Image 1 (cartoon, rainbow, N blue to C red):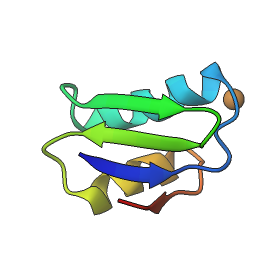
Image 2: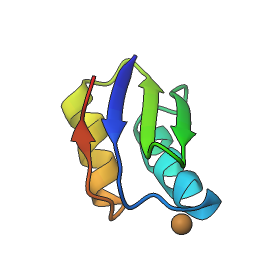
Image 3: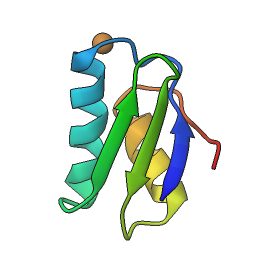
Image 4: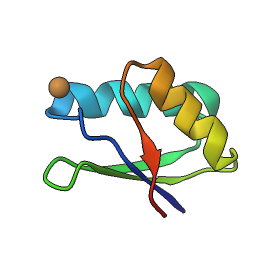
Length: 66
Ligand SMILES: [Cu+2]
């Protein structure tokens, strides 16, 4: 499981966009997002850098934090 900080994620729509972007790369990815902490936990076979790239491509700034 890798953890990302996505500070611009502010509502359910943002979570849906982030989830969709990640699952476009790995449809089996498990995505758990928290609006209070702006953290996204991802369980996926994709490398962390690639997941960060997918989130970034969806228009959100992103930083791996764990
Ligand atoms: Cu939003």
